[in-house]
Image (cartoon, rainbow, N blue to C red):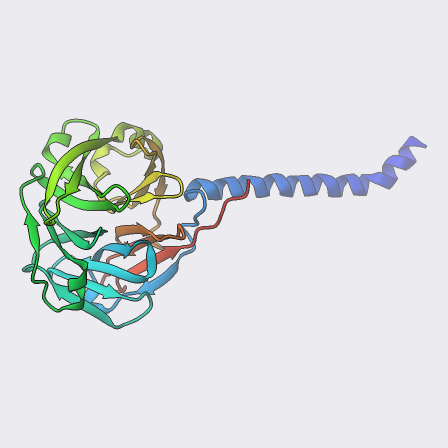
Length: 296
C-alpha cells in the first residue's frame, strides 16, 4: 500500500523539488545581480545618449536643481561650458577661459563652477550660459595642495563644494585619498572650509587591487541614501561610501558599457547619470540608469 502511494506521489515530489531548485538558483542570481550594481540601479542596463562631436571628450556633467531636462557639461580642452538637452544635437556653448585641461563642472547657488586639473576653480553667473563669452569669471587659484584633480561636487543645500584628489603628493605613501571642502564667497571665490579622506585600504579588500589604481575622476552625493558615489576611470570602478566617507562597496564598470567614465550626477528623481569620453569607434555619451525602488 505504501509503495503504491509512493509511486503515485513521486512525480509531484519531483516537480516540487525541481521548483525549489529553480527558486534557489533564481535567488542566487538575484543576489549576484545586486552585488554587481548599487541597490536600486542596474549598471548593465542604461539608456545611452550620444553627444555632439564637440563633446567627444566630455568630462563632467551637472544639473540645475536636479532637473534632468538640461545638462551642463564641459570637455577637456576648450575652456567652454556646454548646455544641451539629452538626445538633442543642438547645444549652447559659453567660453569662460582659455584652452586648458578642465575636468569637472558643478552648479552652486547661481553660479557655474569649473574645475581645472591643477585644482584651480572658475566661477561665473549661471545667466551667462546664454552668452558666447562669460564676462564675469572669478578665478580661485592655488587654494588646493599641488596635485591632480578631476572630481568635484556642489551641495546646494549647504553651499559647500567638495573636491577630491586624483593624485596628490600627500597621498602617495599612505592608503588615503584626500579631499577638500570649500565655501563659496559672495563674489564667487572660494575659501577652504575643511577636508575629508577615503581609506583606500578598505577598497583594496573589496577589489583585490592595489591603491595605486584608485584615481578618482568624479563624485556625487546620492541624496536618497546619503551615500557618496566616486568613479575611478583608470580601473573602471564605482566606489560607494557612507556619509562619512567610509567605503561600503565597489562595483566594476564593464568595458562593454563604459568606454571611459569621467563624470557623474543624480537628478531629483534619484536617477544616476555617468558620462563617458568617446574613442575612434565610439561617440562621447551620457548613460542614464533609472532608479527603481528595491523590493523589501
